[in-house]
Image 1: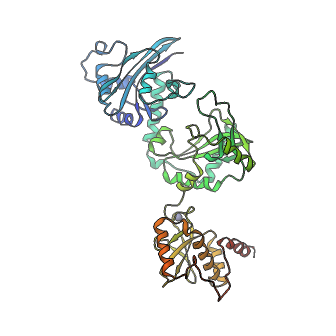
Image 2: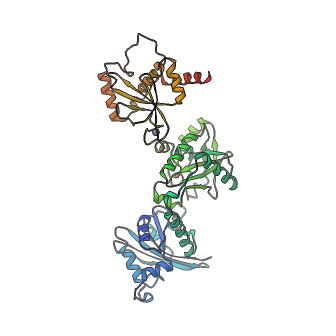
Image 3: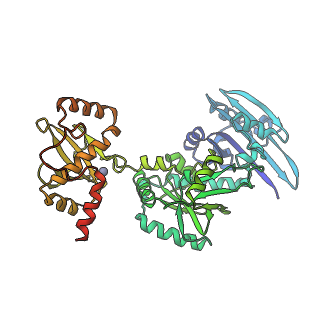
Length: 467
Ligand SMILES: [Zn+2]
């Protein structure tokens, strides 16, 4: 089978600007930050328009499509960047390839012919061959064998990129998971889903390396998978509106081990052809070994560890997902306390004795607000982890006494997690209140304290709901 390619190579972002200024040009991303513009007949004609040059005479001997006009156009694109032009034509084992590259309009790779010339251009563009591959395979230049293949991919990508962002619609998380399950069955995979984070993978396997490819991949199956975080991360993706992918990472122990991918930015979304919700199963999913014992897992993490390479980088880290998916208004669920003046303005939903329940309109989280001495001028908001109904009942048990003790315990337990400026404010409050605050509380003599730790509220709320 043959192979034919005439193309411009360069940094993807640079070529993106080129392609939008020269309409017949379409761009295809390569590995890393690189892109490729196939020099199609249409693009060739557009650049050579009105040129009186006889390009057959003007072109350097070895190239078939590099007219003087094309060469000077490419040169002009090379300010501060390397721009390369390559040609390759093979049929039945015979053929040749050639390359040339410029930077700041100067030839940094003079016209070069022979079997390593494209690799030379790629090396200049910063490509490092992965082990067991050359540069050509590392950036996956073999994925189309004809010019049409490259142009078609570029055109399809352009269509996705031009689709107005507002057209994206996302089903609610539950529906998205249901259609993903159907998709998995259609693809012959188990519809039992196990959600994975990057921390749940242990392996010494690296991409493209023959030496390590057969190494085992271990998956953490100890403990429940955090479905609520997955759902929050999905919602974060919806708010981000760059598209979302539900994807299989590997198969293990009867599960399809999956993850949610949210593109970093528009370029990333275009790169991966994501628009709205996309479901994906790799052609040959990795078969991994599930580890359900937490001790074994801890030892594996110690001995084998999580690789830090491109093969695994699409998997979000649990910690990143937690930060990304917190509420922009109230910080729920990472933040559980707001102190002393700097807190979001939330609407009240219920009022009690020196205590108010508020709800964040953005995420629906409930917050309990109460002022402290002196002069009730220091106010704190503590995240109320139960419902509005429970709040009212707990309040009415002793006119808010238990509720206020819980609130005080939340401050005592969490004030040190506050950001620096808020913590300094709390320190000033401690000084001004002469010990009359929940952190340095003087021994109470008048009444027994109904609750010492905020976690004791759990049992109280459970007792109420069982009644
Ligand atoms: Zn919120």
